Image 1 (tube, helix red, strand yellow):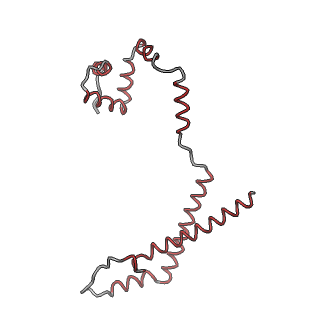
Image 2: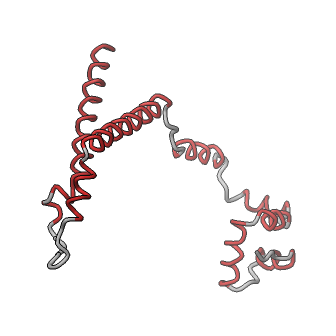
Image 3: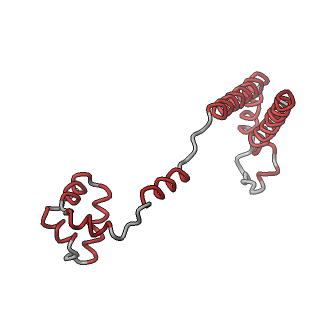
Length: 164
């Protein structure tokens, strides 16, 4: 990264650099702590006083209010705990379904049937969405998610009724 000299920053401050170089130097100021320190050390008390005439007296207060309004809210610990619990529940459900399918030999049967397909005249079906062979994981996931969502909604509704 190229660092600028004090003379270059003085020229920048006085508007003596061309527009393209000025834009490059502004971008550099955003990334380089050394150069921002060097540039700020060039600002004189007279310039600060002159700039103070253009800044309203409540500028700091209004700026702080604006920053406080725009702060990103932190996740509540209860919300985060619910999301972790829900993720864990999805994981357990997926594990149970996988173990069930493995124990029933579904994956092995699919693999054996795939091997038996004739090599000659084999075509790829473009309407894979209609075949359970191609989209069963998606269907299983969607149905599991819907079931788990219903359980959580019922539990949340029961919790609300108890809290009344």
